[in-house]
Amino acid sequence: MHPKLNAAVVGCGIGKSHMLAFQKVPDLFILAAICDLDVAKTRALADELKVPKTYATLDALCADPAIDVIDLATPPHLHLAQIQQVLAAGKHVICEKPLVPSLRDVDFLTGVEKRSGRRILPIFQYRYGHGFQRLKFLQDRGLTGRAHTVNIETSWRRRDDYYAIAWRGKWQTELGGCCLTHAIHAHDMLTYINGPVARVYARCTTRVNPVEVEDCAAITFEMADGSLAGSTVTLGRADEISRHSFVFEKMSADSNLRAYDSSGDPWVFKGDTPALQAEIDAALAEFTPEPEHYQGQFARFHKALHEGGEIPATLADARQALELITAIYWSAESGEPVTLPIGKDHPNYANWSPAKYRA
Image 1 (spheres, rainbow, N blue to C red):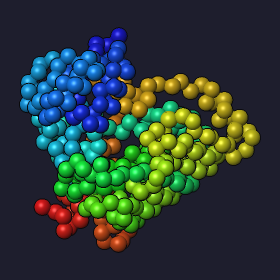
Image 2: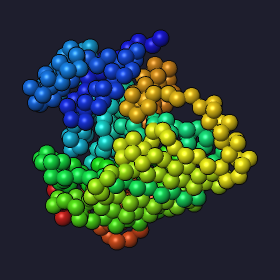
Image 3: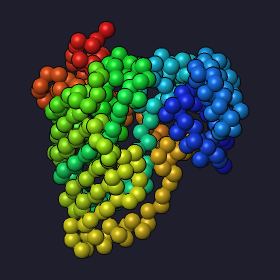
Image 4: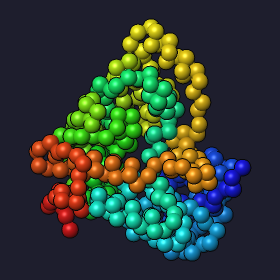
């Protein structure tokens, strides 16, 4: 049995989901502290979850020698400075999406992480839903064959109350709209199975809400393996759904439609022939579920820190996601398709915001 790690969560919004996830793997982590500028909210949440310590500032939290891991569930524009502060304090970092505001910043963090001797875990919790993990299991067994197409739908609803929080809906603070803040996990699921993207064409618009950032998008992807994918994103659908439909040489795979749990069970796997279906069914009988969603990513992180091997999501994974965002926004602004990879000479390498919103 490996020793437990003392974790602290910064941010009492989406951070509450992280807190609950740590408490679902009590053999691995102790939720030792929570931190938020809203002292009353922090104390109330600490009482509800029976967390022993509260902090009002990241400075004070970083000074606590008992904390091993600090989880940042804070507004996106704060992440870069906060990640560096946590690493400098000698602690591992878990950080919500989007990790940082640009490819330049994620490339910079690669050196910072290496020098610190600690690890940065970007959040990609959708990878670990049991339905989606069954697809990965079948792919690793060679039962999918090569990929043909993927259809992705992220159709959610965001109203005035969502944008009542001051940093949302603005390029300088939220850093982007539905493509970045909402569909980033759906697109990570695409690349997790089909590999890297070679070419992107995107159209983005703002139709649902009176905000700066986009809230509707239509995107096509040419994958490096030759397969094709299409993604539609909106924040204007009344009955929220998420959907992934993968078509492979040997089978198809279709997610459930739950907006925020589409990677969980059930998924439908259909073989192209009765013989292939029999192989799929036999393989799935051997699938062993592990913890899923946030707690699944945290459990795999704990294992990697103690046993070695790669952590469940890396800066390279974050870079791939942010490179895709950079390509989407440049294509939407320029009206042209974008070829990946994106290097330091690209106009959006240091800032993917539209030109008129750059500081």
